[in-house]
Image (cartoon, helix red, strand yellow):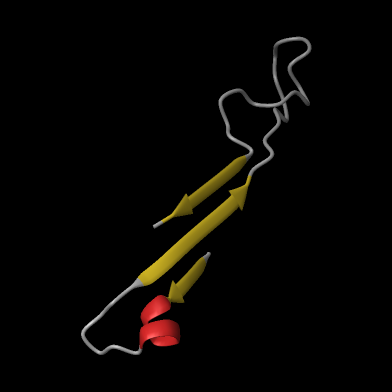
Amino acid sequence: MFDFDVNEILFKNANLDFNIFFNYSYIESKYLKSNEVGITGKEVEFVPKIILKQV
């Protein structure tokens, strides 16, 4: 997570509030145990590996 106050660095205007926010995550998910044959150790479906949010 990273929060950057643009006003403080560039403008120095007391009447202005301007922030940039970044959030990054990396997820690697695998099935640890399953009663079904061939599932253990496989990647979990529909889980994004990279999530990047910015505002």
